[in-house]
Image (cartoon, rainbow, N blue to C red; front, side, top):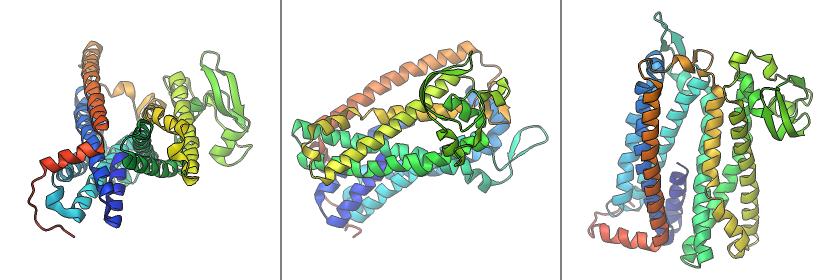
Length: 431
């Protein structure tokens, strides 16, 4: 999703400058986007089938609500994205310059709409709105707009999409850094690095504030036990500290070897240094998240990497401003080796969100144990999980091979291939 935005930026720069270089760069990244899209479809469809196979009770109870957003994601967003992706990849000469830009924009719009509808579904599970309880105990939709404009969804979506943009920026900058270090495709390399770090620094800062701050306040207001577990705060206290490092010992209800900033958690949460923050001792143990240690570490990995991203991008933009970035091999190596880190940060962020909601499947309404399929044994679930893990491992290897091949071939190869595949004749362009 982040790469879709960067492709639109490249196409826009092509329209504004009429420099074919930006159009060729967009073609190169479009092929990489296409590979990601194909693997995303293969891995994403089974996830939706899981609602019926593994979570039958949840689907039966909540289908009248979440079915709205999931159906819209499939019918509107996915079809919009997939249809115009085909036009974008194979119809440039027939569409013309403006028509091709419009196709790229609709791919971007479809992918970001899809992201919102999926996040809105998850947000309803985190903070249910717009529902009513039917006489049979199931959940029905009371307000479509309350579901779609759930305050939790708005904050979570902004935070999630900035993470996607950062991922795209780091990957684009890393590919550019690789070409610069290898002393090849230098014109493209400088463009990739420049766009990656400029867009990346904006996304990295916005990820921290306001979106991260908004999401943190939502958790403090609606899931206070989750906040306590994320921060390793076992005892309620005034002027609660912010844990930078430490190891939670749940049995002893303490944070071992803590490195903390005094009163900072109170200030960040309630804007008062002496504000009272509830710890896990303020809640019944059956309302604590199930895996406090994993939740704590996932959250701190996400926050730690997010902070590192800000520092790296600020350094890169400073060197770009000083006109030294392209010659700073240490910075180029840093951008290159950091390419996998946004994937880790995004995964840690989703682990934080889903582990933090436990033991609830729908927060405050349905526990996770109540939502499973009663006729699916644990052994069956393990069998299919291991099978999918094996299949996804093979697909991941294929994905790495295809991405490596495209990067190794380089932008000029992608454009020569595009020239061969395109028909020579085309109607008048849209501009």
